[in-house]
Image (cartoon, rainbow, N blue to C red; front, side, top):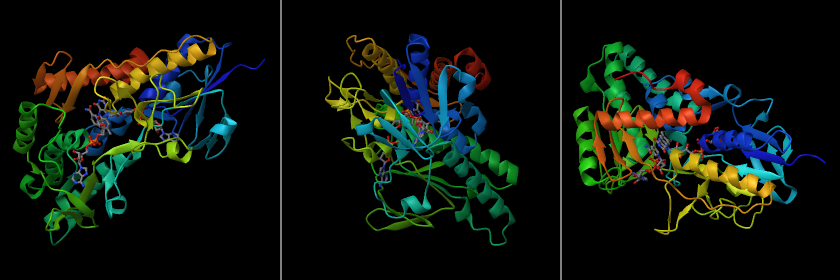
Length: 402
Ligand code: FAD
Ligand code: NAD
């Protein structure tokens, strides 16, 4: 009799952890495990703002999958998932097809532009390694262009960031460190470079208490970040954002949109019932009505029974989904009862550059400055260790002291 085939789509936090746990829980005789990913590397999505600003090299943020997952144990397929044909238990890839007995969908997020006119055409996104690298290279190109141009248009040196959620704030935090380095490299005065963060809401990072938010704004403003709060972006053009009730144009040479994310478009393409871009999963993380399909990580809304609202999509949650998902796939194979997902919230940290940050940890303790930045590095290193063990931690970890 052929072995049951477990197919995992996406090698992000959720997919890598699920694969790793399944290889630990099942013998090679019990099941065939297949991991499909667009690239031959896994990347730390939580470090992409650093890649985009150029404060870390993109190679630090990625790891060749076969260095972490044994290709003799797990069949690795590097291809793009187009859709899942549930009726025929088949995954359609760009270059082939693949059948499954059990499926785990962990394809992560894509940037959501909410249909804002011109955003897809003219703004750049912090979405994956390639898009983050493009931003870094574009910013540096603007410095070179300014340096070598006769007319010296300072708009070329303006960096516009749309949205002051986690991604926008962590990105401008990195820019606060990077811009002075670029000014030095190209002998350009710092006052000629503007970094403007535009946010529709009256403040930033609504998940943090006011004292931490005030700290973050003050720290970033001190380092030259300008905020335009309570300012809605109506449109994006080649020249910049059109904002507010009077449709003011803010010109810039670099335009980055960090205004929100949604689940992989593969979900809708495959006919799952979608709410705001994601599948609202059952307590055991299966898609409603599907016996053998789990949806986890940023593709899933996992409801918090206490608040009646979904948990925020984070790497922390994605890795915890993976633990429950792996247990439940094994339970299905062994005809055992499935478990429900329980979120263990370890806290929330936002970096504000390499040596600064804000955090709220488990018991409500608040941190700011270097202690918060240290905590962010501990969290980043922990994720590396969980996914790739000591080897990955030593190769890619953030181990250098400030
Ligand atoms: P991902 O990690 O995004 O992985 C998805 C994988 O699927 C990728 O390997 C991708 O290449 C692959 N893939 C996508 N589409 C296809 C396809 N069609 N075919 C084949 N492969 C495909 N969360 C935290 O908890 N802490 C943080 O500090 C934090 N910082 C963040 C900073 C930034 C800049 C961003 C953008 C997010 C941050 N998050 C953070 C959120 C966190 O990164 C996500 O919640 C997490 O990555 C979700 O994990 P995932 O496995 O679902 O998806
Ligand atoms: P987000 O949805 O959290 O923030 C987007 C921001 O853009 C919001 O403040 C929103 O008001 C603003 N915005 C939207 N439309 C706008 C408009 N037209 N004009 C002006 N402003 C507008 O998105 P994100 O920051 O990309 O984060 C995505 C997810 O990733 C979050 O759920 C978060 O949990 C997770 N994340 C976590 C961390 C962390 O834990 N350190 C870091 C990054 C991302």
